[in-house]
Length: 102
Image (cartoon, rainbow, N blue to C red; front, side, top):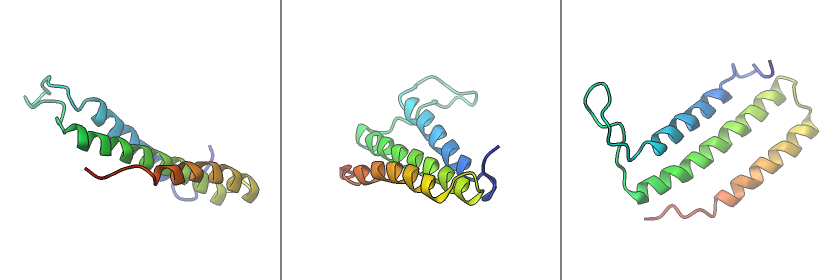
């Protein structure tokens, strides 16, 4: 198994992104859970769009954290880390153009 330097915490970020994606996907679900409440949160389209953008950023953060974890664990050399991170960080620069206003 790769990684371990940061106790695999990179996967907690990825798990958070996965759980957020599930919540986004079930936002409009009006069926009832085991406690009688609706499964979906019913957030507005504006909020839902911002949640989707947040999800993309968090998902990318998890991927970057994994690359950092592997570097510090000796599973990446500096050159391969920089190559992979540069590609992923390029995606982050594109995300900065996202419109988070109402």
